[in-house]
Image 1 (cartoon, rainbow, N blue to C red):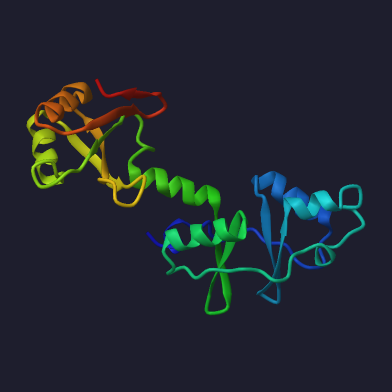
Image 2: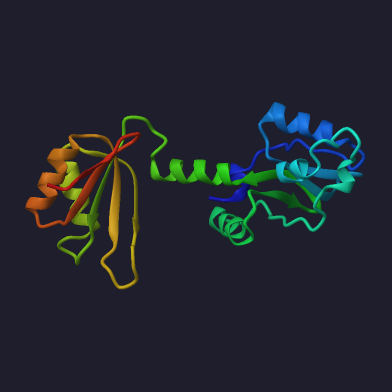
Length: 209
């Protein structure tokens, strides 16, 4: 998934000559935490909630240009979402203006990345259930697990895998939109799979029996 698929567009912006009170009003009305600053349609800075807090009591007397960050880190729309997330994590920032051909076309935030992450995992779909189990060799691999799930009447909405530590067997998660998760988990265990747990959207994890 690319930044351009999940960015907010067109972004709400401020001008260097705006008062901070105006920037604060824009942020409050749109529930934003940051505003790109444009001058002659060029990105020249970004103003954040932190900048506003540092000038509290002087918002009506201070211009955006006097408080904004000028060394703005940007990202292109064709960058993959994982890379944008890594930049925000490394730089400890909550959002990145998206620039193409020198023009600001959007903004991607931590919230956008989190929503995309939930969508990719199928977790934003209410009523789904996630089933976690270890992948250990061909007999206890993804193909065999998928066969068992289908046999037990389960329909898969999303799938993925991860490792808690390098060298460990990968953990596979299946997001089920239909089917009896407990019954499917039991069938997997009978076939030798190490089922780690059943997780419902909005609910607590249910450990493997």
